[in-house]
Image 1 (cartoon, helix red, strand yellow):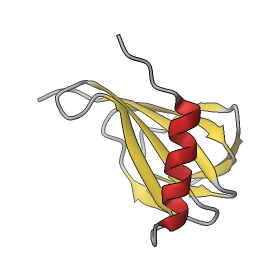
Image 2 (tube, rainbow, N blue to C red):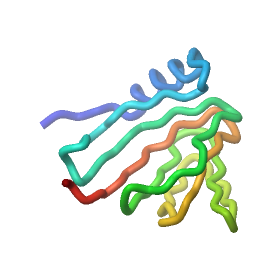
Image 3 (cartoon, helix red, strand yellow):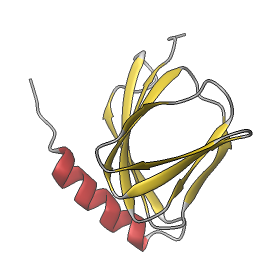
Image 4 (cartoon, rainbow, N blue to C red):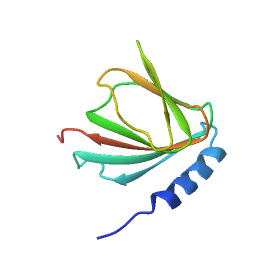
Length: 111
């Protein structure tokens, strides 16, 4: 068994996002293409965004630091540190309102 410090990983990835021209940095916490369950820690600097995209499966988002805005074609939701939300099964985007770190969990069928 192994443990991962999300606090340390969040600090490291946020530092990398601040150095990145795209304003974001990720790290796979668990899973990968060979697993149905995938968890990715995503750090975004204020104003950085993930463009609208489809979810590859059932997914949740937990805000570990900062604040973000989740948008769909018809709705918008603000989420802050400590919030946990189920992602919609429709096109959606994510924008960092402030520097933010989120944990994305996706369950997708394996091939």
